[in-house]
Structure formats: structure tokens, C-alpha cells
Image (tube, rainbow, N blue to C red; front, side):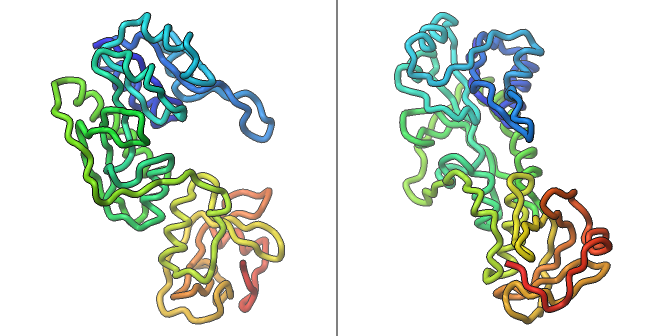
Length: 304
């Protein structure tokens, strides 16, 4: 099958790799323009661009798909289908109508739950038991198209955004190959259970110690690896990378109730949180034991 592929991050690169390995004829790859990243703000190519270049695939990096020249480039390839995965740009009607079989999206949730930009993080933060991949026929609405294929996976108790992303990316690659292997009957999304996965704001990663320990522990996993859940201690940022719920802890929210080789226990609105991996601003991620060897936190101190 002849394909135009549109995607940007690693999630999309996994799907593109699966399509290439399955023997599909990927005629053109679209990805977002290079952008500055890291402390040095050097220009950074997307994971999809790097993969496309390794395979010698034709590549476009438009700022928008509303440019008539982009539509012309896609039409020139006469694709059977356009596959979209975490592209980050809206696909207008003029492009949706170009491929013979339309445009198909790989979405990291069980639609209609978590339509939108950040379905993986929102599922974790909400404490969902299940998530999955939906292969969807695209239309102009935000993730509103008919479902072609869907498969659920369980969210593990220790899943972070990274580990869940990696499992969903692999599942997405497998399902898009399966979806293109045989005709599928589209089914409308359910009218009930619609939720929206708004883009992540860095301020959401700040820990509110008045929340329950269970909610804060989910927040820690949700924002690992980016941007990292954090609190303030003595006026400086302290990131929390690993933590567990400690039952029966009493104290004012944010109060340090215990420090030692087992970690730093902080009182929450309900129960307590044992911090076992932390990072000071400008420092490295450290096990709490190593952190405490070089930085004293006394019982009764306050975080927040």
C-alpha cells in the first residue's frame, strides 16, 4: 500500500518503523520543523525525521498543512492512505480528502475517552485502570472520527508516562499494520464518556501536599520524565522522581515526618508520601539515601 506518513515524536517513529518493516511503500514523510532544544538551544530534529533520513525517504517539514504547495506534494504521490501519529499540526479538509482511503490516525487512548493532546498523561493522572490505542478514520473534528480498530491495555501500578508511552507506541505500531492489512468496518464513537486531554501545563507538575498521597504519587509518575513533579524546599525547587504511599502518617500537609535510609516521609492531606528518588535544582537524580548524605532535611521541616 502506498502511504504518506505524518508524525513527529518517538511515538510516531515507532509506527513509521512498523510500516516500513511491514513492506509498505512510504512515499512521503511529513514532520514538524526542527526546533531548538536542550540547555544549548541547538536545533533538534524529530525522531520521525531521523528515521526517515536513515531510510532515505522523501521528507517535508511544513509549518502548516494549509499551504497549497503541501497539498500538491501529497497529491503528487497518489497515496492510498495517509497515516497520522502525534503529528502536532491540524490536518485540513483539503488534505483529508486527498488519499484514496482517507487519513487514519493512531491515537493513544480508548476513544472517546481522552480526545486531545495529552492522553497518556491524563489517563495516569486520573487513575484510569485501562488505556489503549485507537486506530481512527480522521475527520475535521478533534479526534471525533469513526473507530477502525481498538485495543486496551492495563495501566500498571508503577507505570510512568515514559513506560506507558513505550508500551502504547509498540501497540500502535502493531495495530496500524493490522488495520492496513484487511478492510475494516468503521464504527461511530460512543456519545457517552467523552473526555478531553488538555495539553500539559508545567505548573500542573507542582505538588500540592493537601492532596491525598495516592493522588500525589500518581502526579509523580505522570510527569516522569517531563517536566518532573516538584515541590519547594527552603525556597528552591526539589523534584520528586520516585515515591510510594505511606499509610497512617499524620501531620500538616507538607510536613517532613521521617528521614532516613528508607527515604523522606512527607505528610499529605490523606496519609503520607515516602520520597525515594529526588533531585535538587542543578543536581542529579539521586536515591533519597544518597541525597540525605549530602543535604540535611530535619523532621518537622516543611515542603510546599
